Length: 133
Image (cartoon, rainbow, N blue to C red; front, side, top):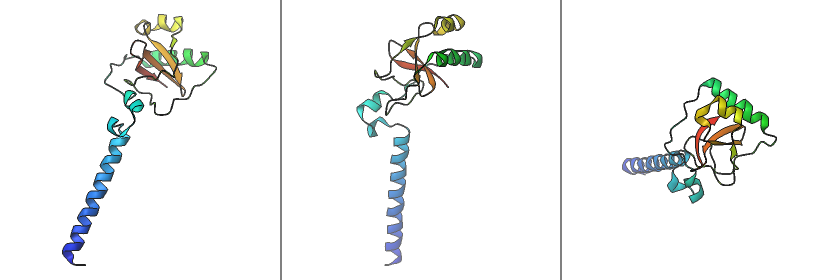
C-alpha cells in the first residue's frame, strides 16, 4: 500500500468514526428523527418550571410518597423531565389538599408518582412542569 492510499484509508476511517459518534450523540439527546413516534411525543419541550423552594419540594415529596402504596415504574421510552408529555398509561391524581394549601401555586396541577419521583403535571396538556426526587 502506498503512503497516499494509507492516508486516504485513515481519513475514511476517521470520517466514519466521527459520523458514527455524531449519530450516537444525537440519539442520546433524544433526537426525534432517530426514535419512534411515541418517543418523539414524550420528548421534553421548553416548559416553565414552578420555581419551588427546596422546603416546598421536600414537603410535596414527603406528602405524596407517603400516600403511595405502589411505586410505579416508568413506561419504556418515557423520561421524566420538565416539558415531557406524560403518557396516557400513567394515571394522574389530584394533589393532596394539605399540599395545595401549603403551596398554592400548584393547586391547579395533578401529580404522578413514577420511579420514586413526583411529577407535577399540567392536566390539560399532560406536560411535566416539575420533577421532585
